[in-house]
Length: 278
Ligand code: LIP
Image (cartoon, rainbow, N blue to C red; front, side, top):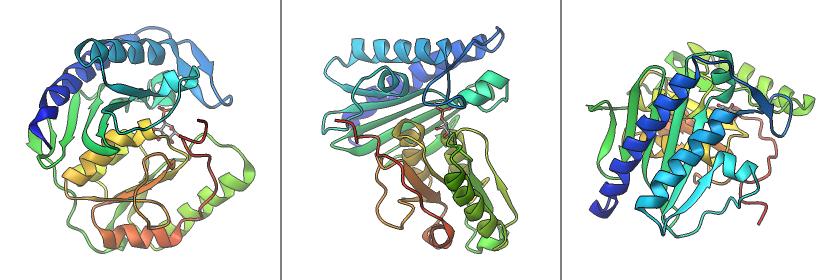
């Protein structure tokens, strides 16, 4: 990573920690739930407040930068990735966990320049763990360098995925059929933390070999993708092509052998791209 982005990285770490404290404190109070695209697509006042806090703080320091934020997009802002330095923000990744007090909740901040990820910061705020990855500088959790698992045999692996918030029967059947095929390879287990960002940090840490999902958004995976790559892992599209941040589908893994094996089993279904609405 060019050193010119070090200041932005340092700011991202500081603001993620500050945002995470707000999220943690909010867990002590009753959470009022609202809905977005469906009755299982949840949002709270805390998501909105934390996103505003992050954007205001970054804007003050970097007034020319662009933003893509989960809640700003929900409020009608464009979801457009340009060449301009862009902060890609999920104030609470794992909103359903947050609502239920299920303790995997992350503040996720990715930063892209000319559409390339320069760094990612994922603050797992209940565990108080700060995961980071800077292009060319490695991935870390609280100062300890992260390395993906060295495993090459998928039948000894743990694979992560999520069921998402689409309840259409055809989609749900495809998700379960994919999970069944992967489970019966066989693998040691399938898990999911309820947050894509944290799942990706588990791959970066070597605690799991891969994570895949169709239906996630760029703000769920931007930071995680930077962290996985810097930990020595790979990130692909679910069809084996290059990773496309706006495509809403992704496989990341400790190596290409594991990624390819998973890709072979994925029943792909259509999702509208994040940048479909111009
Ligand atoms: C969630 C993800 C989760 C995924 C959901 C959703 P949110 O993000 O991290 O892994 O399954 O579809 O996108 O809405 O909590 O920020």
